[in-house]
Image 1: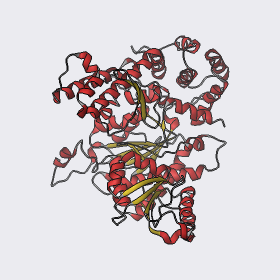
Image 2 (image 1 turned 135 degrees about the vertical axis):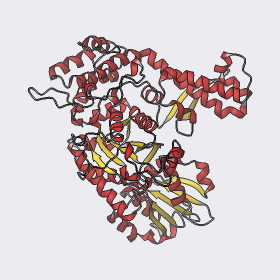
Image 3 (image 1 turned 120 degrees about the horizontal axis):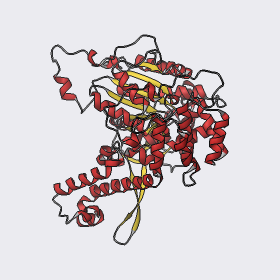
Image 4 (image 1 turned 90 degrees about the vertical axis):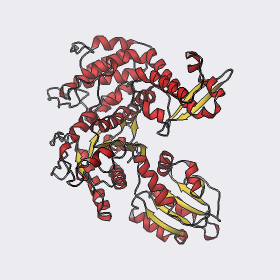
Length: 589
């Protein structure tokens, strides 16, 4: 079952429909619940369920004392105080009554404060619905908590760390509760803080399990696992220029809040268009993980199929490209044709950025990540390839920093003297040198420490799975390390010392070990494949400190390949390469 669908059903059934009565109501949300709702519900659908207005709890609102209100909010001090303020004057309450739904368990002190408030008697419903995460895609979730990066990795930001981690643990537990999972918890042992965080998650899971004994029951559910890893497990993937459409577009184009903006030219006008990239657009879902080399061909082919299917008359190839003319002639297909137009624009946009500057960077980055060139020859002197880029005035300091970091990671650390030379060559600002050194806070060796032995870096190519038979493009030879981890977990081959189970006991997850019904044999497996994964085991991977778009792609690839497992990936937030550099820059503060 898609993650978004699960959250959608819970919001509609357990919140909006749970409030009985035929009168119109106002829905009040805070930051997290607003994003949750936007991710999985349409405004028209909410309206059809009797909601006349959706409001933000943190903004000034017009009093509507004749209407009932439905609050879907996180039980934080800020949101609860705002709720109390709405009903603090009995003669001038903002709404007639309140039906309050918390995203997760409400802390006792805040609950008591709410109960003692003057407006408590206006509250007709008070429930916890246990969804406190963003369903970003069908197999991807986010906690929308970018602050965790600083609290987890910045030694000078320790105040509030445990509170933040407890909140994240609660959010992960609500995800498992929503999916009906009670997974075995594992963590990456190289980072000590992972064990502490895994304990917090286990405590929260146990609390939800005590409330709902059906959690984790069902065919294959005893094999479900939750793995907690820190961002230092693979510093390479979020730094590379990726060439699959979604990762490339979010890196090179100015996409904010998943909105892609571009200029569309019709006969005489140029107008700016804004398009939301989400799973309601099936063309985007088909293309987002495809390599840019084939995206334009794919869009053109899909468009041709669409035109043939609708029996539109097109004269030649030129008019195939000139979609604006087709939209004028066929206004009834405007929505579909506009989507094709958007994706052709996006592919062209990406290629313009690539051919202008990213192409020369990609080869050097891939060589550094792999330690060898496209022919499989080991590279003896990387500096010959790197120096021309560092001296190039047309390469941005952000891209130079990415190259320097990849070089240092490949070397397993360099001397401070050599780092200074690289930074001088590149003429990048001093703060970027600090940024590079801050990567050490993630457990990645940056400055060599005299005679100390280098710790083994498991993401380095020599320690990785062989992928010789897989078809790859020369500029996309690197596979994110998370894919190895996912595959090894599904095959029950993941190293139990480096990724121990929390309780010390292991659970068998081998592909062949699912119990087969004697009565029904295999038929139920065949029938359910590809449509719903509700009955099989799940692998949930959580990265503390951000995940990249290429890592999100791996969850879909592994799910596709193994069929009877569903892999979900989540993190505190989603990273672009520029976002990671900004996070590292902040670590010094």
